[in-house]
Image (cartoon, rainbow, N blue to C red; front, top):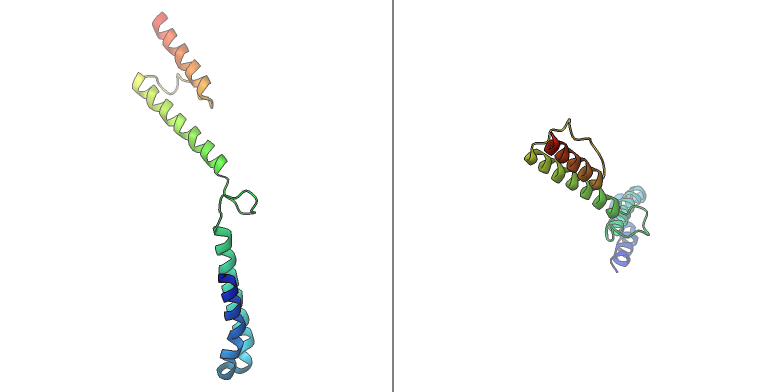
Length: 113
């Protein structure tokens, strides 16, 4: 609906500007149409930013997985800090299961010594 009014507006511009601009109406109308249709195209892309069938979609799955990994790392570092485990003694691992295993191993080593 908005696109229809935009096209009618752009088609009427040469008739409105021709008396005052003369032959300069052609490039002015072209530049105006280029700008307005570009804005309309950008607005159309932004209407559904998470739709996977679009070229410029936002990959929210990857974003959420990265965010979850970062939060798990922060929680683990805070837990290690509160337990008094130094960073050098705890191996840097990527999965939570490996971190839990390393933490349990360090606790058992402290209990045995």
